[in-house]
Image (cartoon, rainbow, N blue to C red; front, side, top):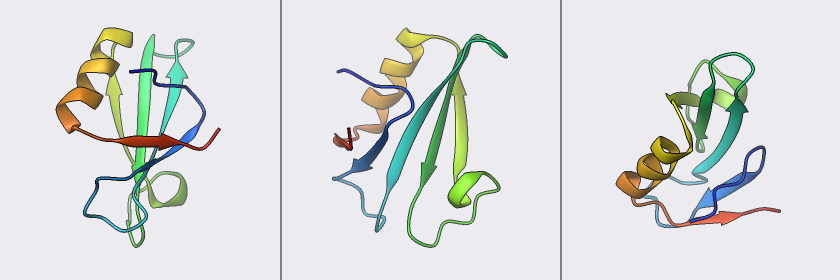
Length: 76
């Protein structure tokens, strides 16, 4: 699965209305990737009420998305 950085994706198989995700390459700071996730009415402390997760490398990023079982439509 191709997971682009800096692109918003709609999680089409989510039960949360308006569920979106965006991955940021955090190589300069932590060497890993930040995964921002938000939906209609979410109240996270990050951008757009987003919650974030961090993974250490591209392999862990692939595993994260696979375990989440997300079907993502990337808005490129």
